[in-house]
Image 1 (cartoon, helix red, strand yellow):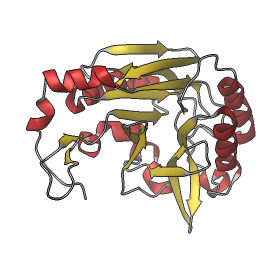
Image 2 (cartoon, one colour):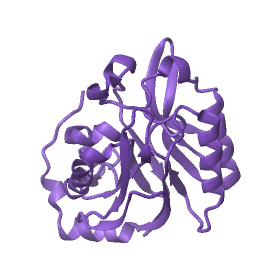
Image 3 (cartoon, one colour):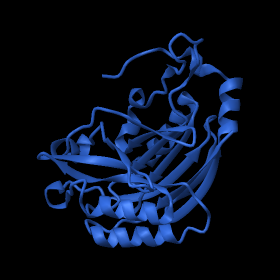
Length: 271
């Protein structure tokens, strides 16, 4: 069975200062002492959770995407996190999944946080991104998406070729959320991350920022890594931290075989 090594970066973000954030994050990435395969950054890691996309948005050929390409290549890692992107006059809270060879996938945040006016500034995405690495399937989502379990539901897929016997399995193995989730609702953050792991029988990683943003909102981090039974493998609150963990596919398969609840899930389509 394969393993997957992931590093999480829980950090303060410098409000709306792209270059300063990119320098800071690169220092943290290059300082990693353990060999890692994926590095996860918070939501809007280059700016903080800003409702100022008219001034801060970039294109997919802009500074931050080019930075991700270079850092991913130079460190031989997959790098992921969300940034502000403009396309055809629309703004997106876009998660990038950057490979070391410069290829990438992206996911536009589906659920915009209307409480902060995100729905008035940003366009919603309509398609999930499930990436593949080393035989692992990784579902990538952003912050407020966490509150909507249907969007993250692990569907049962028949992977068999036409004419072959059914080969059914869950759609993904790891669910990642990148976030700027305020401390005042941290109980919901921690509870829902555990719920997503239990109900989807998968590993869950939630990476949040720390510190006070430009709107004087405090973020306590509470980044988590959770196993398929809902047990917390890592938790850090109220401090910057870089953490590396190796996930075990064998552990995941053991849980799914011993407790095959996933086979009893309702079938549905997301539109």
